[in-house]
Length: 204
Image (tube, rainbow, N blue to C red; front, side):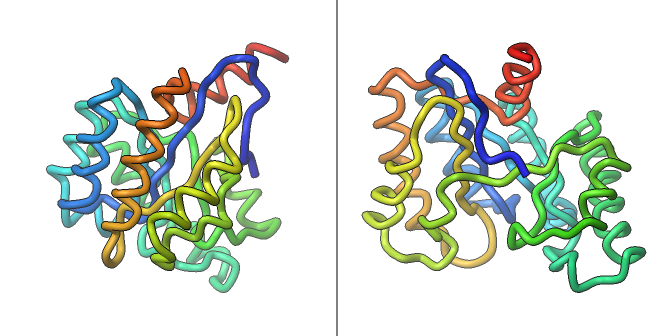
């Protein structure tokens, strides 16, 4: 699972899980547009079916969409066939809605086993984690908490995790607004996960 990429460049990848959401995903797009930043959205297939117009907006602004399963199931508690279907359905939905096959995957709850790894290989996915999991924005621990914990993980090549779906995400939006402004003023460029991974490939 890739949590960051070694690079001499001031680049970070912001990632958002569990969308698309008609309110919070669009909030994120507005924040990033102000700084010409790009992000990666790990989307849930069932949510994509509900909000195709949000998927379209994300794609139109040049952000990346990754696979986050169809129903946010914990893959390690499913049979191999069930887990494969969760990944397969969303792979097909992303390909159909965006015209491009996803190349990255994040398992729900960041929980995986050997079987999930082999399915990632099957789809040609890189499995993506994040450095700031201790910010726990999904638990709504407060804007200051999310910002403070995330700041500890900001460095060249960081992959950072936030949530734009399931429940009230207003704390996350406020925290991301603060962090994006700080990153921008510190000279960081916000890029997609695949852009970071390309740098890693080039440096090998």
